Amino acid sequence: MDQLIVIADAVPRQTQALARFAADLERTITEAYERMSRQDPGTYLPDLAVSLNNLALRLGELGRRQESLTTIQRAVEVYERLAAANPDAHLPDLAMSLNNLALRLGELGRRQESLTTIQRAVDIRERLAAANPDAHLPDLAMSLNNLALRLGELGRRQESLTTIQRAVEVYERLATANPDTHLPDLATSLNNSAVWLGELGRRQEALTTIQRAVDIRERLAAANPDAYLPDLAMSLNNLSVWLGEVGRRQESLTTSQRAVDIRERLATANPDAHLPDLAMSLNNLALRLGEVGRREEGLTTSQRAVEVYERLAAANPDAHLPALATSLNNLSLRLGEQGRRQEALTTVQRAVDIREGLAAANPDAYLPDLAMSLNNLSVWLGEVGRREEGLTTSQRAVEVYERLAAANSDAYLPNLAMSLNNLSNWLGALGRGEEGLTTSRRAVEAHERLATANPDAYLPDLATSLNNLALRLGEVGRREEALTTIQGAVDIRERLATANPDAHLPDLATSLNNLSVWLGEQGRRQEGLTTIGRAIRIRRALARATPDRYLVDLAMSCIVNGQILIRPVPSADAVTLIAEGLEIALERGREDLVRLAVSLLRDAHRDNPVQTADAWRSAASTEPPDWMTG
Image 1 (tube, rainbow, N blue to C red):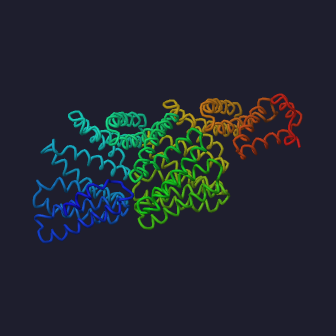
Image 2 (image 1 turned 180 degrees about the horizontal axis):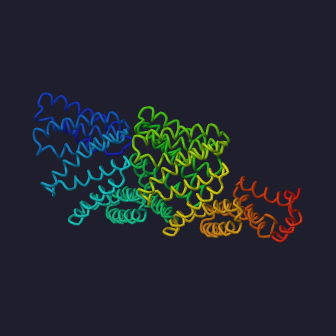
């Protein structure tokens, strides 16, 4: 038995190649202790509890979550008996097993039970730490970390932040007294604190906090790379996210690339341990590349992530199918950005199929992910012209989020609002304007409630919903209300862009673009021109800095500006703007903008042939092209 335990302890965690062997070995040890504890419970029950705990961890690593849960529940039951008989000796172990049980319940989507369980672990460790802080404060801080995660999963974000901040405070004190032992745990808590600060919209604080975690882990990894490079890569991954959230996209990309580089080296040396983390970082890098307009590289990177997860899921579907579905979802977005719509549709359909199977087996854990993929599937169905299917799929996503939000509004109301926005777009596109308007109003009302409670987190989403509501109002001919609504979106985005121009100027330009259209619709031509002029100035600056990402937006604004100017009599300025937008649209393969620009110039030439031809000669120093005059 002793030799088996030594071998089991020597098998590393997170190993793909040895995972089944490790689980089988732990099962053998557990079964032996089962027999021995029946004969002599006083001696062997504690060993049985330890082996059950270890077996649960190994089963979890294999993705066999239900077996893992059943096993850890048995460990808790054994520790309950032991602690009832001898609390001084066994309460710490009971708290540890409750901590692990909470993780297993959370993985299966049983979030309320998970929260109740981790709260018990915290309560036990609070008492233990009050009596003996030197011995039990570290364990209390660890359980507070886990409690924060469970609260966050239930949408109780402020409580989650308060809890993780308590963990940070404990680890700050511990690390001050003993940095060698507790700095790694402090970095972990700072990492988690950044997540919940970001969830509450406090993005700059999140960035500052994750930067602290990175700084600590840089020092730790410099002293001991074997031990701490994996943690540094994780924090760099998170730092890249928050840099992107505050609009510092190039720094975000550089940071994400560092995380990938570290994980490439780690996975080369030990693929069993580090391939899953590499795939996750590749997913993140693909997003960052897309944000700076390097879409072809983003696509290649996303395909690499999918290939890694395909291999992992082939070897262990229970553990890696969920991550494969996430990667397929992301790959579909990258394919769509390249105009490869049919491939995007095929890819996201695969993600949906996987998540349908996962949700059928465990709806608590996987219905939210299924709803997200259904939303994306609806988009690509529409992009290939299958609008009715797109609408039906979008309605399914809304129905799922309705049920989820009814059970837990804190966690799922934001997702429901996003899905309602998507559904309203489909209803509008299919000519069901009044239904689209009603649905869009529901999205706005949801975002109003969210933004009232937490403006930092949800004002950007409220502006997006107001933008969409203006479109729906316009579709049913309520132009004055559309103008008032889009002005509301502009007002919000003005404030956001004043506070953080890097993050919010692109969205402000979008709303200004739309506002100019509605001003023109109301005959307020000069105000429309002033407004679109502002949008063009913003987009020119953005396109100079990141042409791959923002040139198409500039083309759109140029064409809108030209559309306002070209009536009633075409001018050289109008033709110059439309021609600039047309040139960019041709270069970037945007057929919709090409058609719009060509149509505007043809219509102008039809109605005012002499003035339009003169305007073209003045703007382009060439004769009008045949496609315009023919």
